[in-house]
Length: 196
Image (tube, rainbow, N blue to C red; front, top):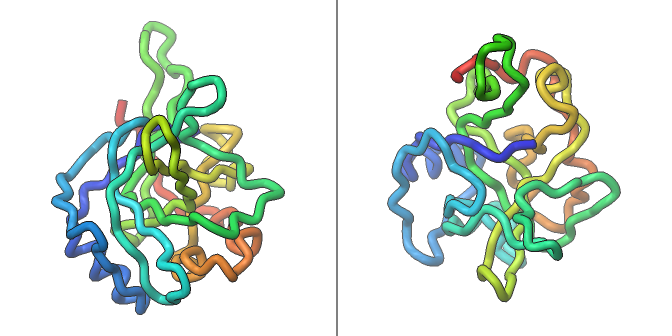
């Protein structure tokens, strides 16, 4: 599952990308000063865009912790989407790449092989997420997962839910069925390269 992703794009570029889709980004807590990060890992703080109650076509960008403690105290950083509707607390997790890890091709290599996935012809993409407020860490987010699509299946038996650009506004609108938005991307949508 995804436990490491990348965001090297600045706030202005993200706002511009959303504006192209007629989605206005608000900054209820002030515009974050995002630094380019090759690796955003579990428990790191990162930007998400949350639903604004009762307002369609807008989202609120805030910085929150990735993962909340589960019942066994392990971090909940991925969350199965199957059979669930997610009628509240939806968010978009902005990324420009994510990583999967496989057993090394070279038997002498001690670490796993690291693969970077990016979206063809799109500088950023959004991962479907949900957030919740917890007594232990406050508000935190997690990434939704699903059965793997054709680009990811050779590397992992699950994948994060990458939303089609046309679905970003719908994901921020809880009246739109989540099940209708969660689907695999067509083959060849993602580029993959070995980076470690």
